[in-house]
Image (spheres, rainbow, N blue to C red):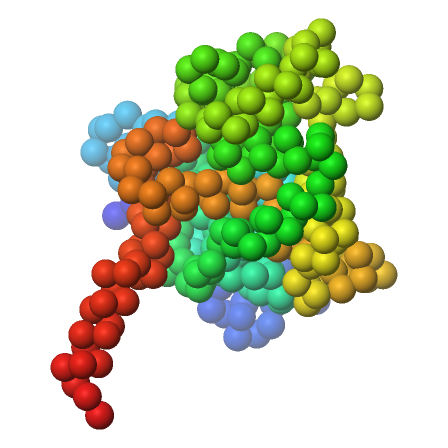
Amino acid sequence: MAAATIVVRGTLGGKRVNWGVERARREGLKGTFWIKWKNGTSQKWDGPHKDEWAAKAAKARRERELKQIALGLPVADSGKRITLSEAIARFLEVKRTESQDGRSADRWKWELELFQQVSGKTYVDEILKEDSYKYWRHFQDRKREPRTIYNRLCSINRFLSDSICNVAADRRLSVKEMPSYDESAVDYYSQEDLKRLFAACTAEERLAYQFFLYSGCREREVMFATWRDVDFDGCTFTIQAKQIGHHKFSTKNNKPRIVPIPSVLVEALRTYKLINSDRQLIFVNRENGPEGHFLYKLKQIASRAQLNCGHCVTGSYDEWGNLTPGTEKYCKNGPYCSQWTLHRFRRTWATWHLQNGVPITDVQEWIGHSDQTTLRRYLGLINVKSDRAKAHANNLAALVEV
Ligand SMILES: [Zn+2]
């Protein structure tokens, strides 16, 4: 029988000893983990391994290999182990190729390096389910939102299940094991809040946030919106790849898409173009480059309009995601309210379209989603607030009067 054994190698009274794991544990021997096996008559050693887990993984791998040799099968990638660092580098390379937007790759880099640090593992084959739980606990200890933790673990699962890592399913979290979170019920702006927000805007700010609200576009899509993307007669806006100076813009899934825009926005853009037709971009910063402060400015306006929720705390986070003490910003004191985000315009826009009876397949194309999961959730929220749902609730009360 092809077998490998884990051995703890340490020194005892100045003498080197090789003990089995059980004995080493029983007698408190501190040492390094090795595996040994027989190749014919000669004794082979492999190590040292980082810890018992690493040694167990190496043992399993070696035994598989010995079995293959015994069966006369070719041994694939014999002895070749992929380190977590290698896997991360390869994964990031793919991510960078997939999208020219460096920010997404930077985010992945931050995330995967954090996972590597938290897990403390060197090789991909050492990764166990426990590492995902450790990563989960890391965020839990830092009091992160359940939704954030869920997102973090989704990313790690994507990385581990990718063909680069190919970590077996029983060494990752299953769908059932993923953290749960309460989906926020109201995720879109109320008409009243928007009225107050727009009333506090300057003419230029008004146009910018109207653009967000009426096109449902993402931040970068608005940043790189050009006059050429607007069809003034057809009342549409096209999101497509382009080169703006030294900035390269590519769409999220490398596919262009077209959204309908209301004539009120088209007319506002037409007027704005009269004085700004000499430039490519619709919205610019002071240096005539892409406007990078839409979010910052939105929070300023919301604060001015006294639309802050008055309860949230934000601040700067270090690279491990901890709120740095002394950097806390309270929205009751200034333009820091987390309720005001650019993405929320997009959700409001999608919700309104669904509410107005636009078929979900159309909204899906306009929003640029590959599936309907998110939109179905919006639809569920709309349906439960519908007149029909209210009638059902009243029918029930009429039927079961108490
Ligand atoms: Zn707030």
